[in-house]
Length: 347
Image (cartoon, rainbow, N blue to C red; front, side):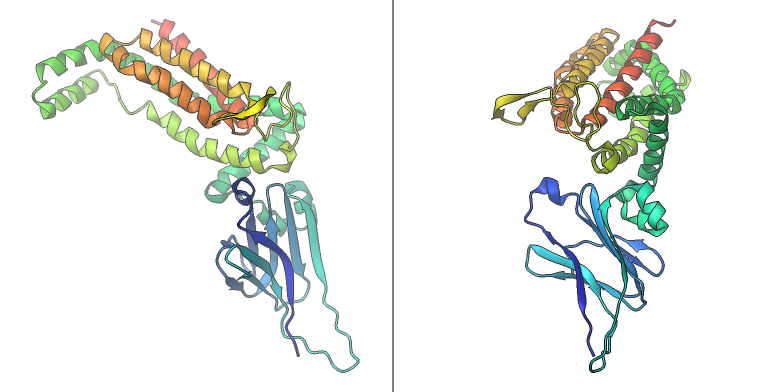
């Protein structure tokens, strides 16, 4: 009588952070998939299958017999072992016992996994925004069947999302323009009630109500973009389809665009010159500069620091991100700026 462990693989937490980020465990019990931390020892009864994945590839093992249990054990403070235990097996003298498994070792491709076993698609998991990410992935694959180039797919996705949020963006721009018109009156109120903050706030809100201006309406399009941004980041960095996808000078849309390399590594920037984040920062500077032209003198003075700080901050933030994500943000910002110019010129 014996119970044998079958080890699927190990995860070493001492690996570089950029590699460790992508390691996940999937355990599918009799009901649903769960995604436990590989840092904590655990046992999972009534196992259907267990899987281990990194950035692009995965290993899946599914026993054909019932009664198997999955496990995560700690071999050391840094190394975890993932696998499954057999049910109690009995081998008689001179007897044999056969256990069968379905094993998959390969890319995390929705199409391949679905064709083999629909339940195995659960391995492709994007975290808290998984539902949005799966929808985006399906949309990207649909667009790819039309354009056959992932760069144009991302540009078209930017256009689709921009058009979907267009009514909110239009409302945001009009609200901003109306607030700029009201700015002289707000400045007068600030002078009048400079010693009474409570009265000042009340009068400003009354002014907004009278002119039907919502000062918070401009935040909604940006708030809606946040989950899209994070899910697109996950999809672009983990989708096997985008691995090695080129677009003009970009060799791989899942990595920074790297126009050329420096002879030596520089602080923060590193050894690569990535042009897309720089173009995005310049675009942001132009957009902020244009906004200042329509602002009151007091507002313009307040925005001077943001004019420099925001483009530089976002430039550094996006510098090492996947070029596909930067391309998406650059196109989306360009469309927003074009509409902003149109609204500003309208009467």
